[in-house]
Image 1: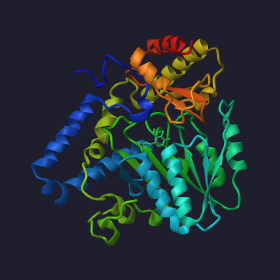
Image 2: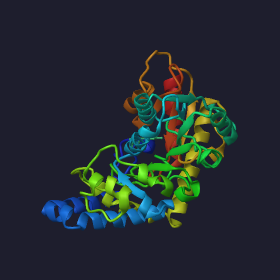
Image 3: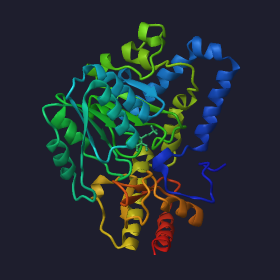
Length: 389
Ligand SMILES: Cc1ncc(COP(=O)(O)O)c(C=O)c1O
């Protein structure tokens, strides 16, 4: 049995979009599903679900430096961002501002726009340079866009299309508590060192199904103690009037039960943490260092093949990295550029090519995980040279 179920006929350079899950984790997930199906009533109503959930919560909290009381599970980072923004709506006044960068993940930027429109507030989008030379360009751009009406900063810990490890620590230190910082850390845990308590933001949401390699549908939201009472899930359920017997206070009651669902991805996150840890002699620190080195090496191959400079300093790169490509010669406006399909169909390579920041400009984003080799990037470089000729 191989460690991953990835199709060996395809070169996988898109861990960034949906992650990949070790086979042993999917087996553990199947065991939970079988257990649920044996007696759903017993599983959900007689304590087993809550007990297993609390156990996994402790493991995830420990992995990201959180206290379990402030950590709840959601299905994905999109749901985490939506829940926080929906919770903030009553506190926003007409004319208040939600600040985002132009690197923000599209779905979450959309959530900010909807929240703002409900509250009569506005979304301000600040341009952050790319290519860029250092972290302070981000800090200066974001702080320069803060006004006395800025109430919330929504910022990615690692940006999506541009693959930048953002200086969220510096921004949080400058802005909290006057501006509430909502960190969309979809990519951070398992890719870079990430400690939510140390970070000190009001809200942090992150995926387990990306770099922690859990089954799909597992993510968490952590809320700082002083903000906990004001947060609820975007879906209102039994917990709102104490109808779900959660022991963990307001926050757990709001999120632990949002209606019947398959919780097997949540309940096997610890299996994923253990499986990936066992793949490197130095455990998780070794995994993170190895995949970053692989990614930086892959980026070097591409920038040499394309004859360009690095678009970002190495200290802003984790296990995904983006390179700007020559502008597209079509006028499409979709998120993904047609070159992505060409690389898949003609070269067997899955790698995202994003239209960014707007057509005709575009970037290609590589990823690195333990199933990748340095030669993968040589193969991509050859394919790119052929396609861009
Ligand atoms: C920065 C960022 N936020 C949020 C998401 C959304 O993740 P999900 O689809 O798991 O909600 C992504 C996905 O790639 C992302 O890159």
